[in-house]
Each structure stands twice: as C-alpha cells, then as structure tokens.
Image (tube, rainbow, N blue to C red; front, side, top):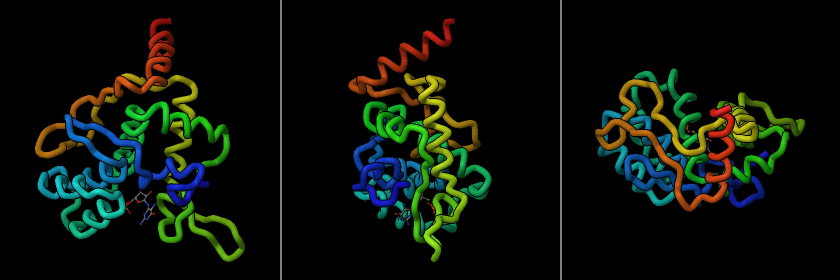
Length: 196
Ligand SMILES: Nc1nc(O)c(N)c(N[C@@H]2O[C@H](COP(=O)(O)O)[C@@H](O)[C@H]2O)n1
C-alpha cells in the first residue's frame, strides 16, 4: 500500500516528485501534471499552466478549476491515458521508478486514499480498504509487463486517442533517457526477445 510520497513506496504515487517526463521536448515534473494536462488537449494555454505548477497537487488543483473544459470523452479515455502516463514515467525513470515497482515483488499495490475510491481505496471503520483501486491495478499490470520484459524500454508510442496533443502539437513517440542505466540492460533483453 502507498499513501504519502515520502514513505517507502511513495514513489508509486503520481504525486511523487523526482520522476520527470519529457514530452515533445517539454519537461514535465510529475505524472500527475502530465495526466491532468491530458484533460485539455484543445486548450494549450491551460495545459501550460497545469504543467508550470511546481507541485503536482497544485497542478491537479489548477486542472480542477478548469474541469468544465475537460475533453468530452474524458471518462472513456482517462484509464487509457493514465496507463500511458505510467508507461511514460517508467520509460524515463527506469532505474528509480522501475526499481521501486520491482521492489514491490508480488505484493498487492493499493493507493490508500481518504477521498478517492476510484483510483485508490478508502479505509473503512473495520480497518479494510474499499475501492476500485484502478491506479494500483494499472501499476500491478505495469509491474508484470516490466518484470517479464514485455515492455519496450527504449520508446513509447503516442496513445491512439483523438487529439492526443500537448501545447497544440501531436504528442510524438517518447524515448528513454540516456543516463538511465537500467534502460540499457532492459532494452537489450527486450530486443533479444523480439529477435528470437
Ligand atoms: N486529491 C488527491 N490527493 C492525493 O494525495 C492523491 N494521491 C490523489 N489521487 C490522484 O489524483 C489523480 C486523479 O485525479 P482526478 O481526480 O481523476 O482528477 C490520480 O493520480 C490519483 O492517484 N488525489
């Protein structure tokens, strides 16, 4: 289970600092900011302000102010967008985020949340956690693919949804960061698997 970003597995949270993502040459501090920016592909100026926020929570709060302008199909694409944002976080932070994911071994991953029973699970009076835990499920899915070397560790193609844009331009294929040592090893294994 993860809750606060400064705890052992806090890096699994989209709110965790230290796992930046570069999209179309734009530096994005957190997967939360990237995910929230994806609400507004038709409003580059709102995306800019979301991404400029120095904390992921203020990025989310800023997006909240513009909720009424969220893309109309949001509810049907948000899980796929979150999956893609997590893939992007992993692609460009393999030695850190990838290491953390693998360190969870085969434990269940649950985001403890007092308010969000969709992405996470909420504590009940009997001590259990109840919720859809969609973020935890996506993280477990990603962990499985990553641990089985079933992920391309060199690049990530844009998601196949309409208007997948950042600052007025189509999101291009993302590439891994060159100084991410784990990537090199994982990519080699991935490529071997493809070649076999
Ligand atoms: N308000 C809030 N505080 C936190 O500490 C959280 N971890 C979250 N959850 C994250 O919010 C994102 C979803 O945002 P939407 O509600 O869909 O706009 C997602 O990253 C959750 O993990 N929320």
